[in-house]
Length: 92
Image 1: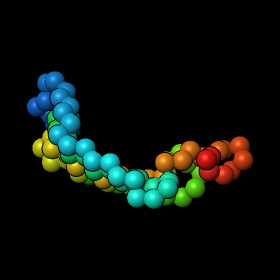
Image 2 (image 1 turned 120 degrees about the vertical axis):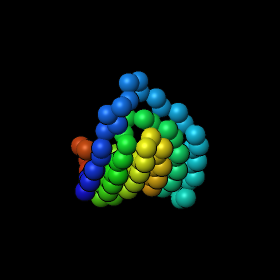
Image 3 (image 1 turned 120 degrees about the horizontal axis):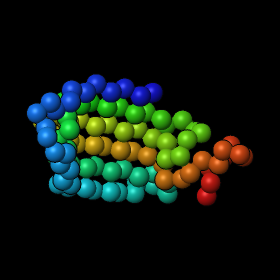
Image 4 (image 1 turned 90 degrees about the horizontal axis):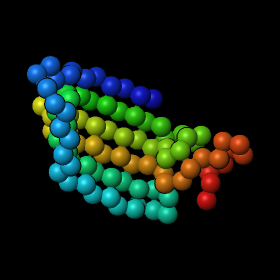
């Protein structure tokens, strides 16, 4: 499932990206959580949800991003393994 609503910043003349804070934590053998706070002036508003926690995809998990006037927060909970598409199992 993927969902996004966004409003581009019409007054932006130069794209600016600046990482403010980034936190990474391994919560189990194969599961990780990331929290990022950053400035990205391409959007005035953006909300994005990506829920791909089923098997059959590399780094399956759930991701949420909210951007208000260029300040963004991103929360990502995902599996660190890659998917073996040929054998249909997680690679170790």
